[in-house]
Image (tube, rainbow, N blue to C red):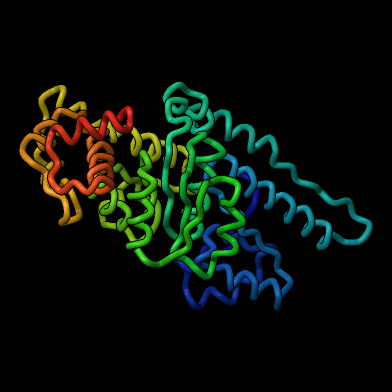
Length: 329
């Protein structure tokens, strides 16, 4: 669509015998810095081949990626053109506008009432450097969602990661210790999590929805259909993932209203991860009257109240005292 021939895609689908053709290209594209960045730097150093490591995730990210390609192509055209011959300059602005307005639905969705309902929602993002950084930027720049913490387990990419997310989140966490991530999520109490399969397990324990965006992943995160993360179609898929992750937080409440499975018993079986608190029957019954989509948060707030006042048994009366103390759950 942009009139650029693809010389080779590697390592996926590539062969060792094809590596000798790497230098036939004008430039290299490294959309995923965890794979290919070192090779691109080597080719630039040894063969003077420029590269772009701009990540084409989200509408704005994809537009930035196309702009970087345009700059490289025009620069290479000038360098390779015979002396005295007119150089053809490419301009991809019309292509970007057409894709944004008519192909991708993500730009339309960002202006819709459904997306505006997510404005100010709190989210945590954690994963590899590329996906976590770009998801943070998408949530902040394109969907007006507040990222209370963005983090990565790729400690060797910490400088790049901080540069990418520093103006788009409240906190930054660089660690490969999953317990630190779990503690951070429990402390911040986000409305949704976007992370790895590990964060999904944490979300289940805290009754917080999670969209998986990065490895390590489960087989269920590999759909049979084509669901890209990159480019304009990828922006559509990301918008769906984000909206459904937040919307599913209402699922328990809707199931209770319309007679679905009994989520109250499921929640109360994991009332506390600590052994110092005991939920009495009256407390469990009162907690069961709380709508499912906020029950987990209410439970944690009551437990904080009980620990603060050295209360070891939580009854309905304790719950009401906690509500009076806070003014609300």
